[in-house]
Length: 454
Image (cartoon, rainbow, N blue to C red):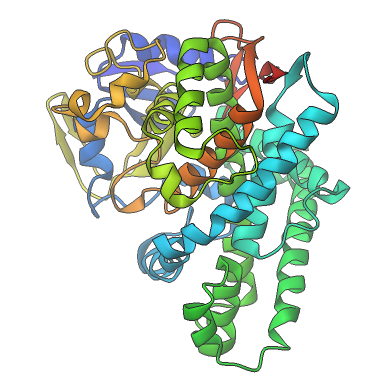
């Protein structure tokens, strides 16, 4: 196996990691402080690691998030994860996703109005705008209300998410902080404590406000959940009141998990897809024409779920953006038994790092891997491609529960934005300074120019 001593760094972590993974084989040792990780970037090896129920436990690194996310769907393991996944899956059923479209359209209009009001014809960092959009949509669709999403509290929440994500990655880069008593004496713990106070205060407010509604419900809550397709939070509250299968702390675990995963990952995808469409005006124009063909020229015509199914080019553009810029560039697992690979045996009890960014740019599966080419995702071009060569939402039993929700939200966003604006490039893939905490981010944001269509 190829072996690399991973230095203690943070500022250049993304660049340094790309340098050594470029020449590393599909399986490589990474030595970080006292521990050895095994890095995977080949689809065959990745399938062995995450494609079955064998290696379901996340890496110990996820424990760095426990004070924030507890043991929610992202971080839990074993029977608890299985029960929680089964409980939450109905919240993302097709019939429920359909009724979210009106909320997506409403928040897209708010985004468009915000851009049109004071951000036209000038370089605009879109990250805070798309973050507002995605946070509002996840709050209303999953938590039942977005009335407090455009307030100072929501700004504080997003800043706290950013700070605690930095703490997570800094802990990874400083192995001595893996020892909890040492971390608790560090300056990072102070940042974490302050951030957690903001994060938990925000989500507790959401839960308390929503729980008050249940005091006035006279009809059977189970029937309401089935007939009215209540938001995810209402389903959790119902499970607590009617069945006692979840308590207040566990509800907060899931609310924290979905507020984080449902807003930050989508915001990053919206950011990079917007930039890529701005940089490829010919493709942007084709997507615009596709949208007009489906919806017609009347801007007041809101898209439906059925309309989105006809926007095949838009779908391919989003998938290609997720290939080039997977919002979560690295995932991890803990091996529960030996894994046999052509590079040797990965033993039981090893921490795995799975590099989606490098997997998605592997020239063996993606010719000219750095080129934005949506045609890669045409059905005829997917034939013969290893199914684990493209996994922006992870894969296997622990894949992203909200991936269909995310794709629907992203399509709604671009339907609204591209009908109103032409996107002109400011930042390009070559000008971005990439970094990562939990997410793949651009250090200086991502700027584009919004120009009104005639």
